[in-house]
Length: 384
Image (cartoon, rainbow, N blue to C red; front, side, top):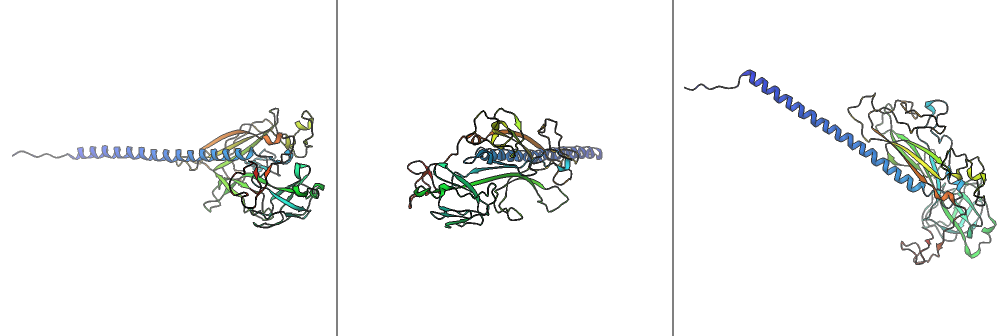
């Protein structure tokens, strides 16, 4: 009778060990691949947010100053700069970028203008929010002024109440002599749009002990009487820092100072006023951004990837250090996120203007005006 043989205990133990090691190796490789996949997906998300932000800011910034005096195109509110002043905790990691432009899609005509009210020739075709800056201009731009809407105006309204006159932009409320002599030519009323970009931290998980997620916000300059700007909006996520650098026509960097005297439309091109620090002399803006990955690298510890990288040098030429402590919260910077630094230069051609541009508008027709079709004379369609 033939004797049957099986596996010995040692053979079973060896085969089990080999199988366990193989499964362990495959699992480790799979987990590593999965972690790498999610890490790279987060990096791609950060890159997409960076591209989106650059495209949006570039598109809007190129229109800065359109239809306005160049020295009114940019605004520099208190605390806009990220530069170190007294201590790292006082540094805002995000510059505020604030600029204005005339909205090329809106125009209406006024029959009467006073310091407190604008009476329109035809009712509004779209609503306007309180705080909206209005530019009121005579034909041929022989005179103009600015005012702010004092209350919400609904579609169909023909009277626009104005905020009280202060004598400073935008509450100038000047009644130009040409307003009463415009006659059948009418008085133009334009919208001035505000683009106010800054970074805010949003507490998405409801835990105040954890850092908030950074978002790039845009405010519109509307409803500013309210404690919170309800019409501000997040436009890009995971933008951690923003740096503005301003360039003169000769290529030198400078910090704009609205207190410097501004050149006017009649100022000679070689006049010293066109080379001082007034914002009217901005010819390009270098926009620097830091974007982080949308997801944290799960393999990173608190001591890894825990800083916001610097842009290189500050305005005074000294070296800039990366941020380890968040200046918004005085807490350590969120760790485990991969970060991308990018800079882009944008020309602001409208500030080169030597005269106030006045768009030519198609004479509106009661039945076909602003219906979506281009007017036959190829002029702008009054009203939007």
